[in-house]
Length: 140
Image (cartoon, rainbow, N blue to C red; front, side, top):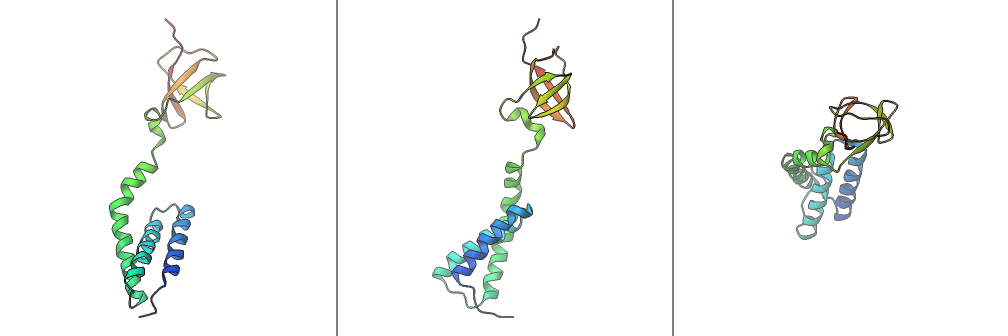
């Protein structure tokens, strides 16, 4: 089935809409079709396609290529697991009522150190509903 080629404006608008839709879908797949549409819009400025089918074919090829090359590395970089808290900046909580107050929530905790009410602790990692912590107080 052949149909009229898309204009540059239609391709740019479609690409921007697809990229915007990704914000709500969280699939990390639709975004590549948006980028590919923008690339084909740029190509269309210099090379007029004879049909919309050819444009859609190129968009699909570019999108799938981008997906298979870039999706996994970018997804890993953007969505770091919460267990790697210690790799980021130093996270600190306070012992209150025999629980750790951290990020506005009370957590169960486990530590090898001696901690007292009101002590600040460093969050080493998160293990389910339990924080593994280390005391920041110097006690002998």
